Image (cartoon, rainbow, N blue to C red):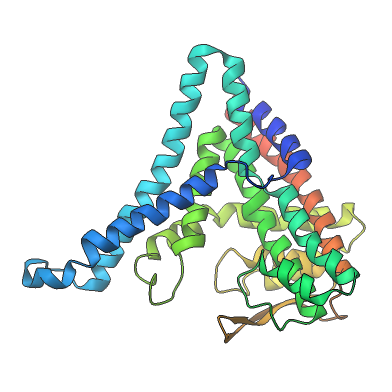
Length: 333
């Protein structure tokens, strides 16, 4: 089937918009997470924990050994997921091209997080609208890494908006672009890299060495998608009645205001479109971490900004679908 990946992308997008991510359903990203946990356990048990007993027999110090193990773990996870997906699709092709289309459509659907991102962030809005701050803190804690126990209404709204804005790239537009480039296997590669970064790509004592390869690879694969997503969000802001000119201005000015080279692009576009300021200080595990600010504090952030951010994310997703389909069609010429 000549345009199978494009058709599967369209079907997968529609399924995601309708179904989201039903709780309890099997999901390949969860399997990737289990693989990462399993392989990390093996590495620590059979390589790092035995390092001290090796003495001079092993020429590398612990830091370099952790880095080497991290490269091996990252390569294994990043390659196994797309290879397994490719093998599944080839097996389906042997029975029927329609079965292969159905399988690829389901995989594409599971790579997207548009509906679930909206649902989870709107749970914060619903609680805030009902003046139930404890419930809002609980709902917010499900989607952010920062401590939420002491956040006030404005801080909870900011956290939800930041989550929607940032994940508009790596949870929505970026997977679709990879689908356009190489179908479900390419999207699975992207998700494997993204999951590796979210699980071991930290600069803390445990992962500063082992997670370096995963973090760097995630930076590389997101260079283009993050920037495309930011530009699409600037364009989408005009479609939903927000300030597209200010979105583009703030995007150009603040898109690199983050420790990650890719994370602030959509946040900057969103902050500009809404006329609010994102970023700043957050508390992680009891420790205050100051981050650069993104956007201008023209007014306080409020709960309704979560609704507006989701409208902007949905419009960005539709534009992203169009770009991904175009990429897929050009690939098949």
